[in-house]
Length: 89
Image (cartoon, rainbow, N blue to C red):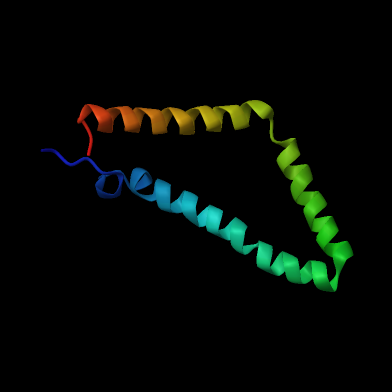
């Protein structure tokens, strides 16, 4: 049986895709710790940081979110279908 794994891929971008995404998510979660301290010490600065991040995320076009969601869900569905069919491990 052929084992086809992203982690064992010869393509460096494929190998690093999942860990890179997780590192970004970890960074966002860990950012809440200093933000909590900033909010406790200087609520005005924390509010300004939050407003800036909100403005940045709201500036991203809606089709970009749709594209990411469609690609992510499509990849997940294709992997699940491949595994159910027995083509992938």
